[in-house]
Image 1 (tube, rainbow, N blue to C red):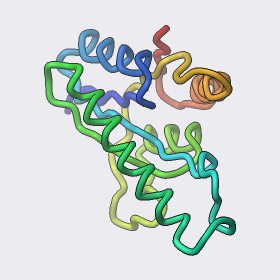
Image 2: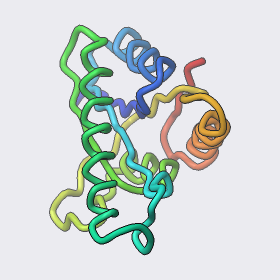
Image 3: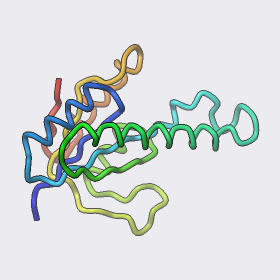
Image 4: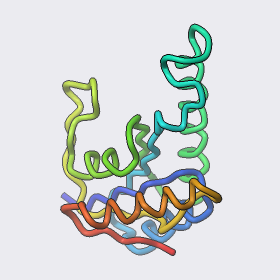
Length: 150
């Protein structure tokens, strides 16, 4: 089996560059682009707002995630698998990289990835600081090699 590369993407230009880097650096590898929906980004939360607010937030976040993955994969001229997960970004990236089952999917365990690629920082403002900490957390805790693209 060939090398499997997991590339985390958040919709930022930097994350798209990380995917381009992975595609050029490992031309024969199987690439998977991962976008993580972070429940902490919900402005309403499950308890607040109006009935159905959490469902509306999730539907909106899923649509955005699907769009992020479509745009990211369109930036490279090769086949790229996509994966959309819900959870805290650092832990979710590490779990997916390790081949762990997503929450609530009993039969979805996969093979571990051989390498993780992500941008050093993503979006701007406060999110940029948080995403920098995501990259740091992945680097510190990953059991596979990690490439951080600047």
